[in-house]
Amino acid sequence: MPAARLGRMKVLGFESSCDETGVALVETRPGGVPRLLAEALHSQVDMHAAYGGVVPELASRDHIRRVLPLTRQVLQQAGCALAEVDVVAYTRGPGLAGALLVGAGVAVSLAAALGKPALGVHHLEGHLLSPFLATEAEGGAPEFPFVALLVSGGHTQLMQVDGVGRYTLLGETIDDAAGEAFDKSAKLLGLGYPGGPALARLAERGRPTAFALPRPLLHSPDLDFSFAGLKTAVMTQHRKLGSQPGAGELADLAASAQAAIVDVLVAKSIKALKATHSRRLVVAGGVGANLRLRETLNAGAARLGARVFYPPLALCTDNGAMIALAAALRLQHGLAELQHDGAFDVRPRWPLAELCGESGVTV
Ligand code: KG4
Ligand code: ZN
Image 1 (cartoon, rainbow, N blue to C red):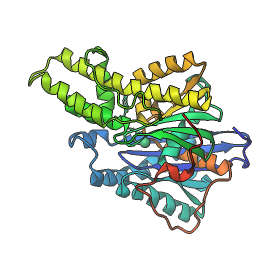
Image 2: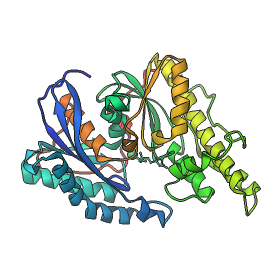
Image 3: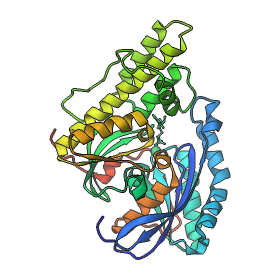
Image 4: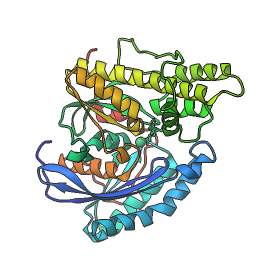
């Protein structure tokens, strides 16, 4: 981590891009990685579960209900007065427009009331940098450069990360994201929402080789992914099981679907490590919580003499800490476009590519 340009600054961060309201306070440290002082999270998962997916209008309304109590909780936990906050950061995008507007509106209004600047952060940059929140006991933080595998409900990308704000896209999904593949397969098997963790739990009792499912683009010469075909294959196999499949058969299908997703993610990550001659892989985003993915990646990387870094398990899915952290790191590196005028916008569709250079890697 390059030497910081700033002294100690307290950054309050808000995440509200989808179905988690996250608030966190981090403090920059001269010459070091910013420190997490406190964080609080409210997940709306139970509320949306009844509908089988996120209902945007309900998400926005719940963010409004939760955001100020969570903010009070964070400040109290950190023993920090609101007036001591130096910068207020928020997720500017990508995500659900209404949900983003809640976090952005609160953050920018708070900043204006305090006479402090606000800072909009890219949600995926938050995920990308989240392994810097890992303490030594949690495996420690990586050093630059590294390859990052971003695997969330909306994104699947491999990035070359040379420093804060220095990202090169190596490859990405051409259709569904890995998290979507988990969620859609889970839905087909009649599991609840969100499907990823439910499918992973069921898979523990199944045989990963029971069903031969496709591994799309496994041997393609690029670093791209494709998961749409897998969903169809899971649907076909599920139909073949008839109207009353046995518990063992469902567990086998869950384990086989998980294995297919994991195999492709691991193969492409290893390929990216080889192509970039990198010895460090960072995994971020909700699917990074998947234990089979972790085990398989760790083993594959170890064979190359490479190491895999993860955010703390609780910070794999959406949270405010990664947003406050990304803002703090941008500030430290002189890359923050601070807003002083109380105006703001959100970017529901905001390709991370806009923060990236051209891919210079040949695979
Ligand atoms: O990063 P995230 O919280 O939200 C987005 O920005 O999308 O990722 C959520 C995704 C969902 O698709 C969820 O099913 C998946 O991460 N997920 C998992 C696990 N935990 C969360 N997928 C597989 N195994 C898990 N243990
Ligand atoms: Zn996310």
